[in-house]
Every structure is written in C-alpha cells, then in structure tokens.
Amino acid sequence: MNAAWLPFVGETEDPDEPFLERAARWAVGVSYREIPKPVRRTAKMQLTSAIGAALWTRMHPLGERIERAIGAEKRRGNSTFFGGERLTPSGAVRGNAALSGALEFDGRLLGGATSPSCVFVPLAYAEATNASGRDLLVAQVAANEITARLGAATAVGSFAGPNAAWSHAAGAAVGRAILEGDDRETLADALAIALTAPSRPIKRSTLGSDAGVWMASDAIQTGISALDGARAGMAGSRDMIEAEDGLLASVSPHPAKAYLSALGSRWHTAAVSVSAVPGNVYVAAAAEAGLEARSQFDRGRTIIDRVDVYGPRAMVSVDDEAKSYLDEERDSIAARSRSVTDAVATGLVTGESPPRRLAERAERAAIERVEERIGVHHDPELTFAALRSTVPEGVDFETATGSVAVHVGKALGPAAAVRHAPTVIRMGSRLAEPPTVDDFERRIGARVVVRTADGRTVEATVDRPSGTAGAPLAEIRAVARSKCRNAFEALGCSEPAARDRTDRLLAIDERDEIRIDRLLGALDTG
Image 1 (cartoon, rainbow, N blue to C red):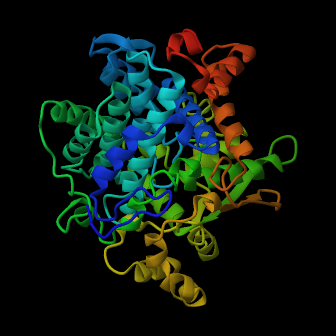
Image 2 (cartoon, helix red, strand yellow):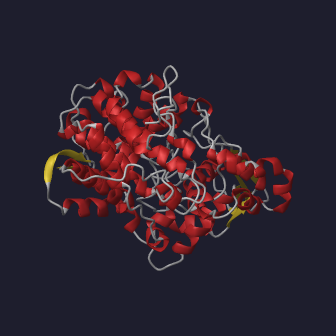
C-alpha cells in the first residue's frame, strides 16, 4: 500500500492497490444496507428483465435448440434452468445465460450487458445454497459493479461491445464467491485467473450461425472454474488489469482506467437499461419508430411504397452486418435479431414488435416484401445526439484503432464533423471520464418515413427507446414488468398469475429463501 496515501472520510480505495484486490475486498465486504435503495430497485428491474428475455427465447426455435443442448447434459441439481429443468448451478447458468442473451433482449448497464453472468450466476447459486433474496441481490450488484467497470474501461477496441463476452468470467467468479462465502484473497486470485485469456469471437460464426449463444456461457464457466482453482491454492497475477502488459493494454487501444475507481460510490447498476424489443438499442429505436408510424395508418389496407429509416452511424453498421448474413441459404437468427429492416418491417406489417412474431411468422411473405422497400440511412444529427449522451454512443467504437476524434470525424462525415468540431475533438477524453451516474442517459434515436402507394407520407421519430437509461425509473420498471408478465402469459399463464409471478421477482429481496419453483410456480406451463 502507498504509505503516502491517507484516505478522506468515506474513501476506501488506495489508488496504488491493484484493482482486483480492491474489487475483491469490496465485494466480499459489501452489505445489503450499504447498497442504496435506488440501486437495489434497478437491480430487481434488471433481474426481472433478464428472466423475461430468457422466457421469450424459450418460445423461439433457437430456445428449443438451447433446451435440447442443455438437457443432453443430464446433470440434475437444485438450480432452475428456465427451460424447465432442475440442474447443477453451472448447468443452469449455462442454459439461462444462453436463453437470456440469445436475442439481445436482456438489457445493459453502464459498461455492458452484464445480465448473463451477474443475474444468473447469483440466481443459480442462491438456490443451491438456500440463500435469501437479500443475499442474492448483494451478489448480483457486486458482480455488476466489477464486471461493468471492466467493460467501461475497455469500451474502445475490438474486445468491446458485442465482443466483450470475456468480462462475464469476472461476474461469474464474484457472484459465486459471495454466495459460497469465499474470502477476499481467494476471490482476488479467482478474478486474476478468470481474466487471464480474454477471447474475441469470430464474427462469421457469431452472426452466421447459432454458435454465438454460448459466448457468455463459456466465459461464465471460465469464471466458475477459476474459483475452484483459487480455492485449491492456485495464485493469479493480481496486478494483471492495469499493468503495462496487462489486460487493459492488451484489449483496448484507449483504456479508461478511471472507470476502475469508486466502488461503492459510483453505482453502474443504477444506469440500467431494459429492452422492450429484441436486438440492440439501435434496432430498438428503429423498431419503436416503425410501430409509431404504423399507428398513424388509416383503418383498412395500407399499401407501402417506400420506407426510409434514419439513425446514427452505428445503426447503419449494425444493419449492414446483419444483411450480409441474411442473404445466405441458412437464415441466421443472430443476424435477424440485429436487422433494422426486419424489425421495422415486422412492426409495419403486424403492428406488433418482436418477440411475439419471432417464433411464428405467418406474415413472413408480407414482411419480406416490405423489407425490400426499406432503405437505412445515416443521419449525422442523430449520430451527434447519441454522441452527446452521458457516455458517447452512435459510432462503432469497436473498430477504432488510432485517434478517437479522427474515428468519430470519419463516422460523422466532413461537413458534420466540422459543424460539431468541439464535440469531436473532446471525444477521446469524454470516453475516458466516468460520468455522474445520477445524470446518466443513453439518447439513441431513429426516424422512420413511410410513403404509401396513394401518395401519403407518415413519419415518426423516437429520441430514446423505451426503458433506456435516462428515462424515469417508473418507465424502466414498467418495461421490465411488461416484458416478463407478457412472457408468462405467452407460456400459458393466466393474466393474474403472470402478474403475480412478475411482482414476486420485483420484490425478490423479501424472500427468506430463493426457490424458483416456489417463487414462480411450475415453469413448464404450455
């Protein structure tokens, strides 16, 4: 420890102490009452949203494949797999993480989509250890805070964004260690072992096949195994995160070390976003704008002549990537869930957003005809609006290698870059500066313009998708609640039963013992 460091009142972090040691000490020491009430509330929203996403995927053909793969393991235990089985904790987590993240429908925090590990590892081990709902929530929040900090610190570069599944190894180690009572020394070594070999997926496989559903699950198994190794006496390099040849330097050209600070005072869990529709936030914005446009159609048959979708540069990039994998003989579900054109066409034809239409596409031919008439365009002003979010978005930072400002300038285009020069120039420093989470918002919008065969024009704009950080907490809670409740109803529950099950999840910290079968009843409902 730095002998010259003297803490101020309330400050517990030695800036010279390795992050993994600080993180482990904080995680094993944090208590339920030390977590602010608003953070506990957002954690319950995150959990409810993630379980809702897992249940929706269960009704999708991809969910059936995940269930068959997990069922083949034949290892029974005390933890619930939302495919309808009771498995060992590691088996349940593997299946639930795949179900929750398969359609990019679970949500995210400041620092990434942490739910596969930070929700489902604590949930599985809480069941296995007869832990209380408060114990579960502490493990979930602690796992969130450490995993999200690693994601935020490496938000630029090819290991960021969809390629950040490696960080789930940390969430798994933290969530399990807290519920099974490990000390800080064991957890610090487990984290160092778990994060030793971060992997980067092959896009051809993750978007062109079903293989991507296991990315988070594989990292989670690494974290679970790392804890076993640490318990057996294996030591990790505890300074491997911030060392000159450590993780940050290895995975990001612009690491933001400042994000590794303020455990217990800057709560990344408070910046929760939950998804109202499958696909990432750019797909969500366009899908909601399409639904709003559809609501303006006249009663009766409306023939669509042309649709133009405008959004940030990253939205165009997401759709372009998806298209390259949707033209092939075998339609990729992973690519379809990231397709802006598919999401907008589905809403315009059916008047409903996915996932209700993901498993059953009776209108598939009509949807495909509308898809052929959709153009997706970059709107520099919408990119600029996203860049002005608390943490800049709207540009694909995973492809940045050199200057962040130059990368953003190219994405905006010359005219817009000159017009917004001060913002562009400061972009690198803004990405490196942790925000005040109380003011955190993600302002990612889209505009849809529909021209009908009879010459009418219908236009709709969404400034921020429903349930996204920056919205009132009541709205975020309502989106999480609606998603989960509707999933239970789609599985065959009555409306009162579905509402009751969802409300139990939103009050999970009132449970003296976590048993999903007692909390939610039989999951194999239809």
